[in-house]
Image: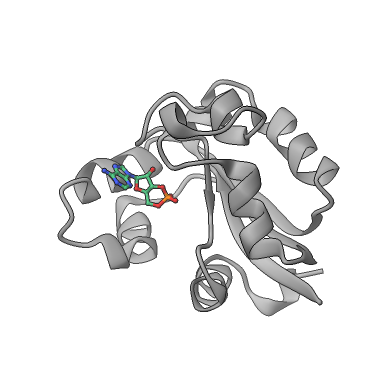
Length: 138
Ligand code: CMP
């Protein structure tokens, strides 16, 4: 059954000019783009989005990085979207990412790792609702 997931093309990938290439990988893998917007986010918005990581040693660096420049917010749809996107993304640390994955091709470090994808159904629902209004999902 078609499932929705949430994704971000992170500021490192946008800065490098990899947005189009990453979108092409996503569409080639069979995802429908339900919603898409490029914007800059504040540190406060990043802190709210990553609230589950509050207190972790990488929280400050992560939220500073995510608010350091424009990024692309996405809602994607396909059968098994959540697991399939995470497979397409590759491991969080690009050094561990498999050949052919987005992080292997476009990411440079654990922090600057090109793409985010929801890790479960509840997270996907929270993340989609955090960035998009219902009328934007088409
Ligand atoms: P993301 O999927 O966006 O969710 C949390 C992010 O924290 C993760 O990708 C990484 O980019 C970032 N991060 C930075 N350092 C670490 C770390 N040591 N362990 C896990 N995630 C980290």
